[in-house]
Image (cartoon, rainbow, N blue to C red; front, side, top):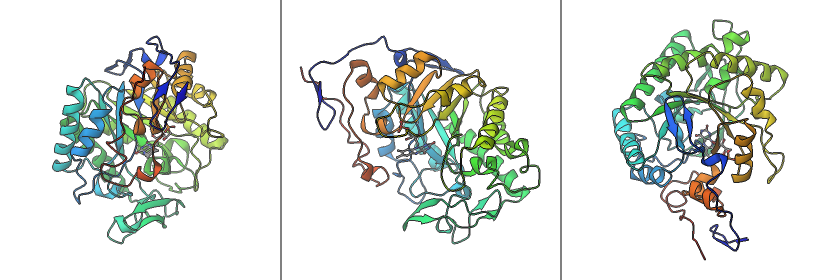
Length: 379
Ligand SMILES: Cc1cc2nc3c(=O)[nH]c(=O)nc-3n(C[C@H](O)[C@H](O)[C@H](O)COP(=O)(O)O)c2cc1C
């Protein structure tokens, strides 16, 4: 078999509908026709000052509607949440109207779509906040980068959130979830991966608080659990997923034994709550082309009994293996969905995959966004 630059395959293919990834699944109150989940990917295409999704967003998600479930790009719950340029929000009426166009088209095409709720906390930059430092759990610089109009810039020492700030933040998540419901989404996903607000509160190096939101593990996870309760409220049934990255490594984030114990307890608590699914970003691959470490997911499979999505470095073969082994119910694909809008059909037909162009991941405009072609089939 040979694969050309756009992923067209000539020679032997392996057409099969009998793949674990192509089986249907029940996720909370959603029925997924397949287990190929489009993982969240920031694409920085909301260029207008109101950060409203446009027709480009409608086309992008419509092209990918065959996914078992679409998780949108991270989307701001409020202006305070902002930490990256040209990312859409869900805190204004105009934004909700823009998203309604996206959900209407995805649903008309038979798809399911949840909105990822994002807040960067201290992993932002004064450029996003009128020159004032962003707020975080404590006055500790997370030593990350924030993408601003002047390019990637180093984070600064944030302002410590007051009790009133924390209460306002939970209320902003609640309002964002209500807007998402009105905009026609099938649910929401709490973005608690990477170096952003909710993982900052979980992190004992960044969260030095001595109030009800810092100190021991139970206090450090309190904000996340309050946010979960808040975003569940607008929905009937199980419509809120949680995305975690216990193994995240950057700045002051290290997956040591203490961190993993934090996450063990957190996941056990999530198991007690009406969570639609748990979306886990696993360990980074040791080298390109390596296979994801399934034990990294099995650890949480033992603690969480609802639907589990595994993500990070999967392809058709390793994704099928994860579902077959029972460590995950579905698999999230981010980079493959960027470059292969028809990823589910490519998996079904055993077709090769196109490679995405990293230079256009966040570049704005249609190029590298809505112009990846469907597969070319050559007999
Ligand atoms: C361009 C790009 C943007 C991303 N944006 C987000 C995001 O908004 N929210 C999130 O939780 N993860 C985000 N991720 C992480 C992906 O969801 C995923 O965890 C990562 O790419 C590994 O999965 P993959 O090997 O299937 O690409 C992003 C990744 C990429 C490449």
